Amino acid sequence: MSEELQGFAPPPFKADAALVQLQRSLRDLKLAAKGPAFELRGKLVIELAMAGTALQAKLARRLMLTPEWDRFAIGTTAEQRKFLDEVKKRLARWSHED
Image (cartoon, rainbow, N blue to C red; front, side, top):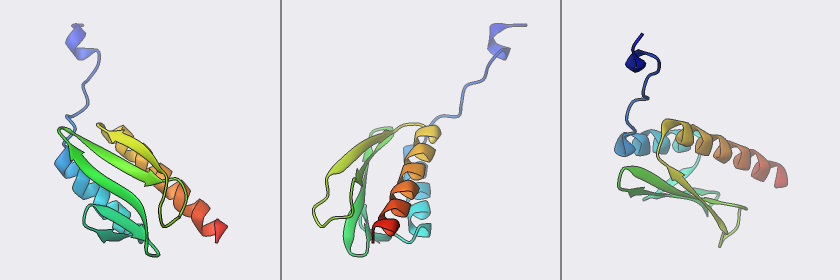
């Protein structure tokens, strides 16, 4: 067997398509879109930006008017899923804190 057939390369990451898909998923989670950002109950919780062939995301640590941010670089579909999973965890935590 040749080395080429032993493994496969994942499809290339398309940041523009991933951004649209991520925005749709965030709206499905009942977050309000405000330009490149998303809010929950009037508080900014996520900011998204294109950075070449990847996405840059900022996710609030806590639900506050002036949040502290965790930064994520999204350059693969696995990183995109991981970021969305983290958003879901924080939304669940914030709903329990209220």
